[in-house]
Amino acid sequence: MSARHSRKGAATPRGASAAARTGGRQEASTSPRGARQQTVRAQGQWQAWLRHHRAMCVDSLRRLVRQPVGSLLTMLAIAIALVLPSALWLSLDSAKLVDAELDASATLTAYLDKGVSESETGRILEALEAQSEVAATELITAEQGMAEFQQSLGLDDALARLDENPLPAAVVISPTTPSPEAMAALSERLSAMSGVAEVRLDLAWIERLRQLAELGRRLTLALGVLFGLGVLLVVGNTIRLAVENRRKEIEVVTLIGATHAFVRRPFLYSGAWYGLGGGLLAWGLLTLGSDWLAAPVASLAASYGAHYQLPTLGLVGSTTLLTCSTLLGWLGAWIAVSRHLAGIKPR
Amino acid sequence: MIAFEHVGKRYGGRFEALSNIDFRVSRGEMVFLTGHSGAGKSSLLRLIMRLERPSRGRVMVAGHDIDKLHPSQLPFYRRQIGVVFQDHQLLFDRSIYHNVALPLEIRGLAPRDIARRVRAALDKVGLLHREKALPIELSGGEQQRVGIARAVVNKPALLLADEPTGNLDPQLSADIMGLFEDFHRIGTTVMIASHDLALIARLRHRTLRLSEGRLVADEEAA
Ligand SMILES: Nc1ncnc2c1ncn2[C@@H]1O[C@H](COP(=O)(O)OP(=O)(O)O)[C@@H](O)[C@H]1O
Ligand SMILES: [Mg+2]
Image (cartoon, rainbow over all chains, first blue to last red; front, side, top):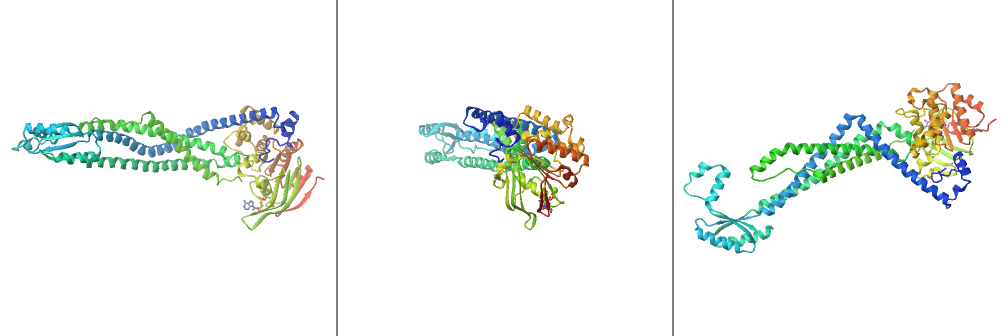
């Protein structure tokens, strides 16, 4: 009569007739027949388990569809919670690109003494290129510098009125190793060269950008955790209501011998469906958003003379988003059901 | 099959709903449990189902102290007991068929086996023709018969019923009791709580009488 002996129950009518049928050999679990029966039984339980999963998967979806407005609202709440960290994550991904570009564009600018002759300039250029740490140089004469300055500021008239070009000639130097330390050392040595007035090294803003990127990463992580909790709460609350609505049913099935896993299953599937739905909505919002932003971002980048495209989720990103949202939904449901099942006692 | 050994049950610390209950029921017996309202009949049945735990003493079912069952074993223990409630506890959002099928679905039977056994149980209580109906469409007596079909569809060794004829007229009550006698006849242990003394007297089975939580009489069938 206990759980352990449930299958034998020799004194029950069922047990008695089964024993009669098999001539009592059912008890002898070492007999080949007993072994075969056990395999069959294990297979049957596995099939039953699969069957219930399939049934609950479909049933929970059907319940969601039966209340389209409520389900959609829940999914929308999940989607909104997912969009912000995802968008941040995406822009961070593009920050990584900027990072790589930073390395490539890390340069020193050596300003030459004012009024150095062309031959003097040529000599200095050669001396610079002879350095092993220098990968490439690019000369910007005083006139070129002036022209660029005028163009970028749109101050043609004001500058045209100046009698004399106030700008020195400059050499833009790409170092072989773009690390901050190596560049600082190089700049020190170059500024000691004759004919070089000053070496400008824009390490500071590179550092600043790097720190900004790091800040972005941490912010994304923090927001991801926070909004992930938000998803858990949204799903948890929805599932709590669902459990409350089906309280009577839970009491009855518990009364007639349902396991916790059996009771929990439909709710876990509901949670997973909510999560998946929310994830799909978030995916749609992200796609719409990046489409909407693509044109201004492109022209903004073009105005800086850069070519930059908003990153998209891609296959890996989309899969990650949907997997995470589904798992979050499932987890939220699990927490809610486990907490509330404890409070449901059959009367 | 069932043995109560000096069982006491307190609710909320002070009030003793059952005190020093001591009796045995053999396998295959049919027993009535009577007593005034509040005498402790429901409490006693809930102890057997392990919905409550005794404050003192032991409840043995099929030789096992059920207080020692691990929570994870409880579902499997309960699957072996068929229970019929006064308010029959049917689920109103599904058909008669699916109400009766519930215990079998919980046990994970194949749909084909479920169909066969559900129809057999419904046939037994005379409701095979209503299998597609919703519980709300049935009369009180019919609903109670669905409750019985659900309790026996699993072929339990032990059948408990708490006031199964509570709201029914005498003729329907007699029909319902007849069903329980049928299950008793095929070897099921049956225990029925009821205060319908006239009906119990006519049926001639062992009767346990409770009064204010005490077992005041244990009368064998005349
Ligand atoms: N869950 C409970 N909490 C507190 N008191 C209860 C509870 N269940 C029953 N009782 C009390 O125990 C006594 C016996 O109740 P019960 O077993 O339902 O009697 P019966 O079924 O014979 O009418 C009653 O006084 C009732 O108020
Ligand atoms: Mg009662």
